[in-house]
View 1 (cartoon, rainbow, N blue to C red):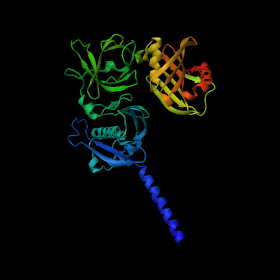
View 2: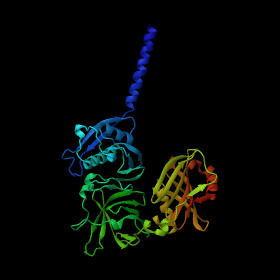
View 3: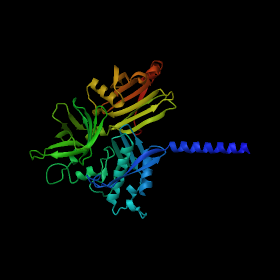
Length: 431
């Protein structure tokens, strides 16, 4: 009998331990119900409420599910990715945001009479919830596997470009009816496109404009800033200035048009930008990708970005777990045309930390100029040794690099250099 009691006590203790472990694995999060719908004094007017919840794992999907349980609305996501400074959310077609309310019974505290207020509520609530629980500054909304989030009707903005971060309903309502001076809304259609630095000055590398008065600016250090434009026609001649402001209304820079396909940012020399997607000849040229033969097996994909500054960026961890392979292609107009600046700017785009001890060996790849590169990044035990080959074609720049833990770089150098010697530049089938 005593033995049976002891066994039962042991089982009870194990069950209690397992229960406590499960409880301790929960993460406490804060959820936002944001009824701002464009109001700039929503907090003061009690239009924003919060709720504490627990999730088994902190992910955007888990937060969306928690919002669904709280509100009775379907915050359904196809996918979500968390990067160092931003989160990208892909809304599902059957989410209440996209599909609408249907004939469901709404909760008393979350009852909506119109589609617009419902949609702003869902976008604002998830936006605020993500910012509150992750150390990021930007949230991007998409649908249909990465396409821009769009609605047939939504005032004052019905389209949210995939490459411009969501800014919250108060921002969009504050700039409704057109930004800038004058009685009528400013026409920003002329600005639409991706603009790349063609001069040799300025910290701004790329400027992406949606043609509706919003932009994303990408700087040399990789920083991305989103905001809005204001049009100022000081002389009334229709050739005014477009001023850029961040989401908090802080003035950044202004630009003017030199021609339909060239703008000048600020007043400094060398800060001219060309519309890279306006070049019909360049647009017809397909982008290639480096392929090594024989290839490597046992690779684990880390980053797959098919919209990296108008090109692509792929990184894969090798089976040895000490080397990352980076394969990247970008439009040639994205960086300087001067050799040293071109190499430096390209390295800054693909390297997460500051680099040093760069060596450059000039060579050719077919008829194109090419460079064999090596450099170091990171410090102490995190030091990384890079071996790379950079090829410059008329339309695109390509780099294939091995990013290896410094302690293992010497023994692998021969293999990496042999692979770089035998790279092939392959283009899409039929191009």
